[in-house]
Image 1 (cartoon, rainbow, N blue to C red):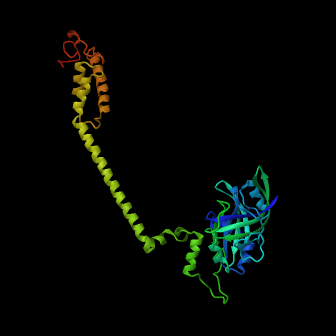
Image 2: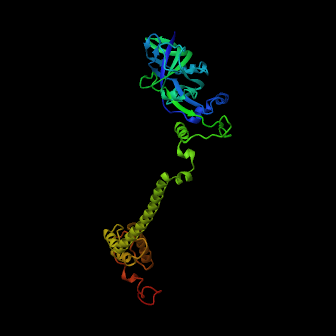
Image 3: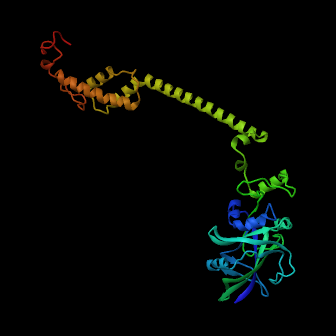
Length: 368
């Protein structure tokens, strides 16, 4: 069944100025600029996937489900020139209503996971201020609706007769997410950067500061899009922020340097502490007898320890003990000793075999 449906939409910025302008055909823009040097455009989502509660003419407000197929059907029916009207009537009639804009382009786009149908509206200078005041639009159309178990499902659109504009303080939107997506006023008469605008006498004209501010706000432009960093830094109002940032950066560098000096000082202090108690830590390790050394091996290790060595950490001392114990074992074998690491106090070598005595060692002239 075909029903007359009124679908209301809120406004919000969700489409860039560049994207909005790119959707308008070049020939359409050129034609508009023949009579309006600074045309004003807006983008509206007039329908999207989901559930809405529009007003059905003659039946009142009802919930309708809008599948993707229904939204896609709008592509084949929306035509340029469909008018925007001030307020809406009980019927979808367009007679006797004030026109405040028309559709010049449309597209479909997925926003937050839902397919939206977006229309671009043009508003002439005579009505653009009125158009800016309204933040709700109502799609007035004839839809093919399917009734299933008491539920209405949108199938395809039959005809879009117009779009009404209203005030959100008085109008409740049918689509919670169908909104005005952006606006733009094209101040440049030549988008490619041609000659400046001229008045009817042929004199060059420049926009006023108020017009420039309005344009910048409507375009949602940022300072970085208009000026290079050096220009922004030179501004009296912004210069102090950059100066403070530089001071903070300098102070931070100085603090980092101080921290490095402190770290080096702490490292040197720790090294001195380790050196000062290195011998006592060695004695403690020897007492624990981790390597199961004999008394003579412990004495040998202690006597040959250099407490002035660069590395006197616990790990370094343990490594020294292992190496010194190995050196002792080699020397003991050379001089005829029989002690091995792990003997833990093995017996003294026989006196006749003491190679440290000149009598037993032909290589010695006197006892060691």
